[in-house]
Length: 399
Image (cartoon, rainbow, N blue to C red; front, top):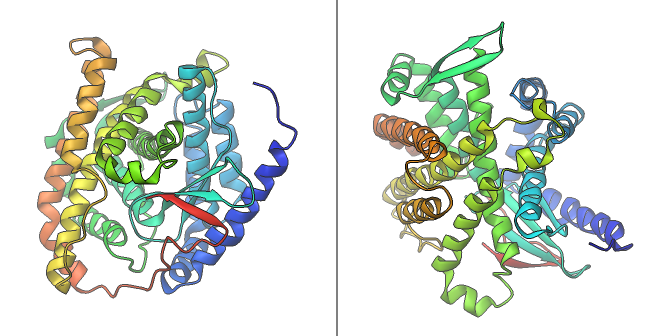
């Protein structure tokens, strides 16, 4: 691909617009102010924990992991979460190059101090042909809490001599660990609440302290974030917003297509593409990530139930969904998997085993937590949120 001398200048302009119009301007609300205070209070703990433990994941010495840990140690506040999204975008673009021979480099990513649980796609006015993906805090908070909870509950073993990890993928054992610790239900309920209503954010969720727990949770976190970013990048790949009328008419079909692209990009194994040697490659990344794409839909299904709780509490009319039902999306992902990874293969059995464990565990946890969540939601005061559409200097292309 021929290098465009204007590329770096344009990228700086887009980054400046993100900082001035999205990250700062959208913080000018009750919710944004609360988030800012939360990030400043928790940032040293979160950043150092993530920086230290990401390097302990097999393949943690790879260049993109090193860049992530550097960003985590040098940043503050919201930059930790932005660093996670940026690393995922690097992986997604590497997968796109492996798939099609080139990637769209005119894509930037950030996250928004908002609470819609859907991503936004912006097209800045000052430069043509650039896209900005915004993932909001409501979605990221749910993903962080999901990964943290399973890290506390997964059973397994770590051999320090060989640095080998083994996990017992038993939903029953993980649920028993959840039931045995009342603090985990409180962490789960507190972490889900900001994903349902724009309420005061919880203390940053902790991860399980044993090596096999921490690594499992961080692998799930990376997997789900990759799925989020790859889905939105899929909209860019297919230029879904170029014809807005057609996009509205075929909205559900477009979402299924972006879902399928997220699995396709994961199966291109960008972790292997970017690894310089065997020690930088962790083959389980791909397995976790495809399973994580399925887990995302399970999580969205559960959060929709939370939305209905709020509807019942407030008398609010249920909002029309812009996306297909999560269970339909999960079935669509399985059909894509059948094409990409045939059943009865070793790789497919491993993916199905991780997905089965994660989905069944969280279904059971949700069933045990609905009453506590409903009571918790009753006590929350929703904070004012600046509308996600309010982004001067850009067209909002997709929600």
